[in-house]
Length: 233
Ligand SMILES: C[S@@+](CC[C@H](N)C(=O)[O-])C[C@H]1O[C@@H](n2cnc3c(N)ncnc32)[C@H](O)[C@@H]1O
Image (tube, rainbow, N blue to C red; front, side):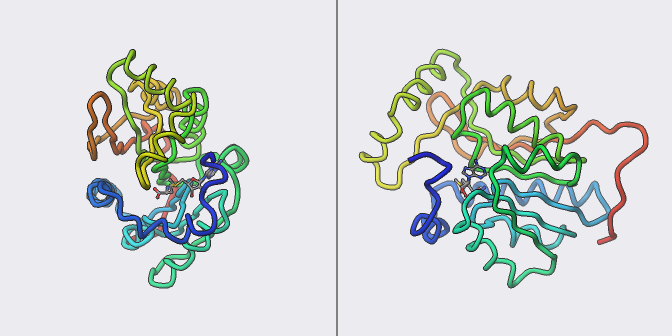
């Protein structure tokens, strides 16, 4: 079962309950990026979360957000996300679409674009395409979760294992286990650079023998003419 059709029914319903080991480290990284953004911007921002899944970042975004858009291919994940909007103070829109359908139509519409727990499911070509589309959708910031492999040989072997069906085998061995693909740092960096983004801050949330799972806050190099206007905090 692939990422496109996995997150339905019970899987969607139980997603938040799984309490993955690194969940708290991810929240800490995310909050630290939000406080940086808050310091550098005096105004509330438009946020795109793609894929938003169960909307795990919605509570964290409350103080900083003007409008929130959550995109996901799974209606069941979206209906979990909608429940989280009952306690927040910003308007939200949820769109049931795949990234390939939604992203090409959203040029620079958002101040912050978030993409977590997603890139590791895709091969290099798609990762490059997703990052470039996410970046072109953002007017200023990107928060990405990336799984970086520092060793080209190890990365190649590991990804070969995943592509050749290792994922299913590992799943059977390890309850709730998930093996996702790692990519070379330059794959992420070159895609960002093509869209004129630089990595402003990076936080390692988990390390394995040859790879690390990192949160990156990337920022668009500003062009003359400034940013689009937003409301004050
Ligand atoms: C591991 S979850 C991550 C959700 C959320 N970003 C998070 O950090 O918890 C992966 C999500 O990707 C969604 N998804 C899978 N394929 C997709 C696609 N082609 N386009 C958009 N969303 C997709 C799934 O429905 C699921 O909600």
